[in-house]
Length: 126
Image 1 (spheres, rainbow, N blue to C red):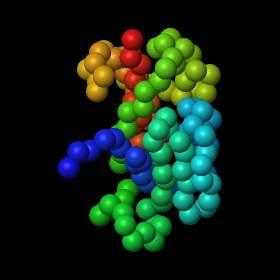
Image 2 (spheres, rainbow, N blue to C red; image 1 turned 90 degrees about the horizontal axis):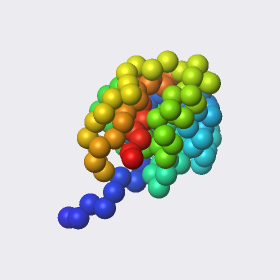
Image 3 (cartoon, rainbow, N blue to C red; image 1 turned 90 degrees about the vertical axis):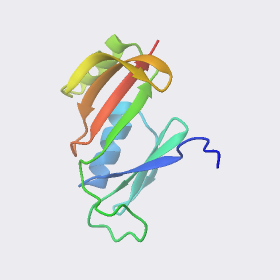
């Protein structure tokens, strides 16, 4: 088997409209689907789908729990612009900026939490 890429991930959140608003407003991710029972945003060539722990899903993780994910998204902006943008939304940093090795080499990482306490790493490559 030759894997090409990740198509989508599913984040478990407490409130889907609130999660959609956060990812759309803070990260400018276009909303693809917006319902009370599920939602989806586009992140580059991938999708981030949202579900709640109480949704009846036939195909889901064994124990979907709000706030249990850690994801890394890649920004095209310089680190200073990212920091200023997050400050304009009053989003506190969990950590960073930190130098790290990412999938594409040396990067600078900034960590925040979304409203459900999922850890979101924002990577900036040179």
